[in-house]
Amino acid sequence: MFELVVLSCVLALVIGGCVCVVWAARGGPRWVRGVAAVTIGLSRVVRGLARSSRTSRSGSGSSSDGDG
Image (cartoon, rainbow, N blue to C red; front, side):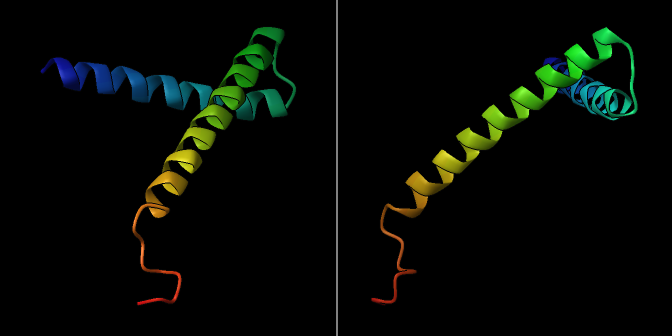
């Protein structure tokens, strides 16, 4: 039950951040632009972490290099 509440809160924050990004692109107030900047920054961090995780997994014993 606790996990569902946490996941629901995270989902609400993500959706709210996306709404702020769209609103800021249309010229929203200053606080919306701030939330949008934080959202975009966090998305870059998550993307970088996912990319580094993906490259570390693919380099460990993958047979996609044509040797197999």
